[in-house]
Length: 205
Image: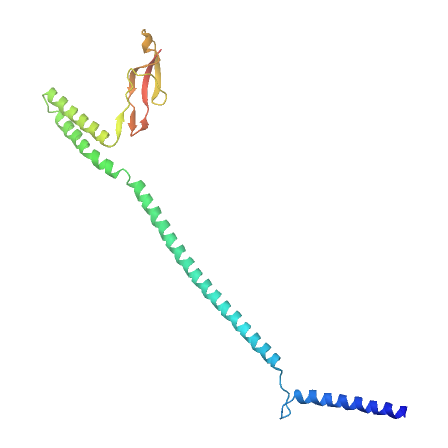
């Protein structure tokens, strides 16, 4: 009896395994006998294709933006180079013709001097010649003032190294003249508030 029961249990185990194998085999094949792909594997394949498409699109967008930036850079570089050349050319022209307006204003004074020299030899009235020269001098002085040039007042003023250049010293009897300008060898001038030329003076000691 014990041996028979043991055989029956073995048969029941075999039948259970066979039914299980048949069920798994049936689930993985369709009615035509072909193997069906699990739904989870199909979804995974679609997800991989979608991710690949996204990467391709992102690369395309980045490449388009890069091409646009390169085009802008080339244009800006060309515009800046043209601006630099134009500015350099304008600066060269300005430095070359900077005094054009000033010289144009001074030419009429030169005309006055030429007329005075032309009449000097034939002139018999020295007073008239002197008045003509005084007129030219006044006209030239007014021209300097209009252009911001004025004389440095130096005579009898205290010696100032910021305005004067001492070319000589001379003894003086008056104490109040010591250290002061007693003679002006060459006038000095301001251009606006800047010293254009120092005055060359003789200082008392």
